[in-house]
Structures are given as C-alpha cells and as structure tokens.
Length: 270
Image 1 (cartoon, rainbow, N blue to C red):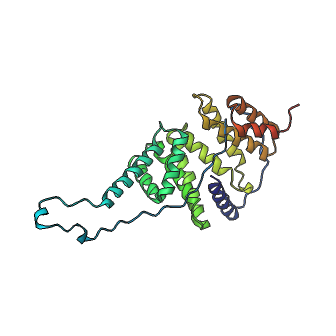
Image 2: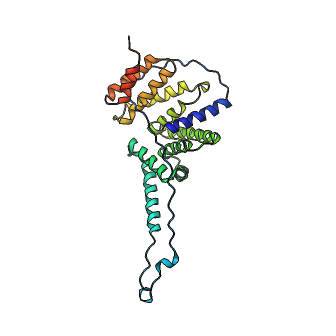
Image 3: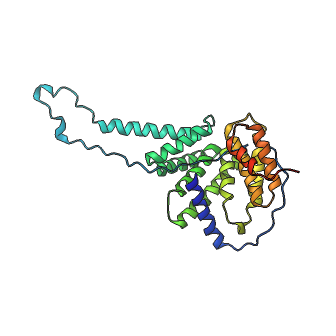
C-alpha cells in the first residue's frame, strides 16, 4: 500500500493547493478502547495477455480425416481460463464471507493479470445494476485508489481519489458497518494536507470503526484501526491518547508486532 499512500499524498497536495482553509487545532476526542497492523499493498507490474495466433493451415486434414472435428486452438482454453479467473477474483472482492487477507490477494492477482481497468468497469456496471449493494460500492472505491497508485498524472489521481471518497460514502450510506469502506476512507483522508482540516474527521472515522469492531467477533485486520488511530492522535499532538489506543489494541491483539513497537516508542504513562 506504500505506493497507494504516496499517490494519496500527491492527490491531497493538489487539492490543498486549490483550497484555502485556515488550520484549526484539533480538540482531543475521547480515547477509544480497541486493533491494527500495517496495511501493506504491493504494486505488481501488469502482465500483458499473451496472444496465441493459430494459422489456418495448421490443421490441414487429409480426405480420410475430414469427418473428424478439427482440434480446438489452445488460445480458446487460455481465454476461458483467464475469464474464469477474473470472474472468480471479482466475486472474492465483493463477497461478505471473504477474509481481508483473501481480498488483498485478489487485488494483487488483478494487478498481476493487468485487469485493474477491467475490474473498475465490471464494478461500475455492478454498482449501476444493483445500487443497493454496499459491497459493490466499497470494492469500487478501493479499485479507484488502486488505479490511482498506478498512474503518474496528478490531475487524474485527484479525480480518482475524489471518486473513491464519494464511492465510500455511498457504501457507508447503504451499510454503515462496512469495514473496508470506512477503513480505506479513513486511511486515505489521513494523508490529506493539514490545511484541509481533515484530522478530526479521520479520528472520528477510526473511533467509529473501533466501536463497531468491538461489537463483533475479533478479526486480525481489526488491529489496523488501533495503529492508525494512535498515529492520528500522535500526529495531532496527543501522544497520551495514542498510547492508550495502542495499549488497548495490544491487549486485544497481543501477537501484533507493530502494536508492540508502537507501545515501545510511546511515552510512559504517569
């Protein structure tokens, strides 16, 4: 996700230049008790599809063999397998039953297949056909940000980032408890420039996410929310709140190495 984060930083900077907003001190929000680890997002080079060309003379038949069916070109099997793999990957991304790790693997596979643009088109169509499905909107928002990390044009990045944020809002309007939508939205906003005063909103998004998490059975990706919320408190000048959040996350996820490291770097509590 490092490239994605850098892309979001660039987008935030572009938007920041277009707006003039006075900075305001972020008031401390109540310390929230809840989990998080880093969100690595590896960007792979696109694999160009292989085009198999079969000459018409390849399957010449003798008069005795003309009654036999001609062999099926291998390219047909390759195309079929590719389509099946793509459809399976999209279904994984929109499935409420799929784990966070499975969805991250699916995004990686799409990029390796060079199918991210196709995935965006597919998800846009699904969202248009069934606008009541929050899973479609949540996946589409993530697809926009994945694409944002792969392009160089800052203006295009800004457009995609704004579309992603709006799409996450659509998903959350349909399902306020959609974890992927709220988490990815909050992470993206955390990199907007300070003059946009998004710090308080980021804290509130993570605080709500943590409250929702603690009302559900524990999942390993929930640890990420504690890490990010603590980072936001520390960035806005409240290291004591950051330590409280990390401590809570470490209590729930004692094997999370990043939370351990965060606590080790936090100031000792009086």
